[in-house]
Structure formats: C-alpha cells, structure tokens
Figure 1 (tube, rainbow, N blue to C red):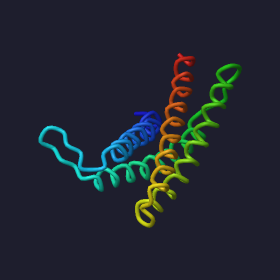
Figure 2: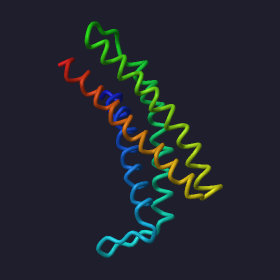
Figure 3: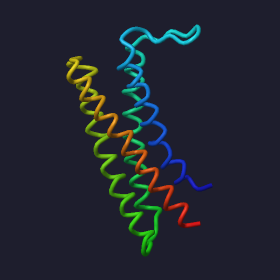
Figure 4: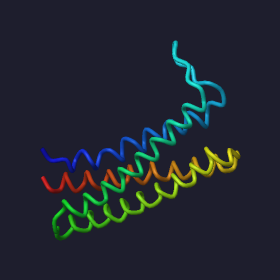
Length: 144
C-alpha cells in the first residue's frame, strides 16, 4: 500500500474543513443550530483552530513526502511539478504562520481585528491548499 496519496490528501481535507468551521464561527455570533444539534461558538472556534494545527502539521509532512517520493520529470510535467511544489511550500509556511496568529487570537487577545486577520490568513491557506491540490491532480492526470 502506498501511503503517499493518503498523506497528501490530509492537509487538503483538514485545512478546507477547518476553514469552513472558521467561516461558521465568524458568521454565527451565537450558538449554531441545526435540527436538534446545538453547538456553542467556542466549540466551533476551537475546532477550526485544531483543524488548522493538524492541517499545518500534515502540510509539512506532505511537502517532505513530496521531496522523498517524487522522481525527476521533464518538460511540461516538470513545470507543473515545480509550480505544485512551490505553492505547497508557500502553503505549509503560511499555515504555520496562521497557527501562530490564530493561537494569539484564541488564547490571548480575542480582538475583532485579530479575528478578521486570522480568518483572512485561514482563507489564504484554504485557497492555496486547493490550488496545490489542483496542480497535484494535473501531475497525476498527465502522468497517466
């Protein structure tokens, strides 16, 4: 069984899902209600935070696995791989910065400005991870 595909999908799932929780937390100032389920805002906020932490860690592992498990490519495929790798490194770096910033927001300041900036950083992570995934899919598609 090849573990590399599972590793590279973890940051995508975790960061995008975490961003959805951050969006719910930003939009819902009160508790979140759906049918008989009631979730407090602090629970949604912490869930978004922990998904960001796990997504950042898995992004680092995914980048490292990309270095370890990929081989030399040529032509257009190499250009796509280089773009994919560059965006993946930027994503992992930004996600680490976002964890630091979100930690500051959740555990120290709780200010509205810090909340919005943290949300924008999370949004950037979600967009970058989706873009990274797109180029990774292009590599797989072209490789076939």
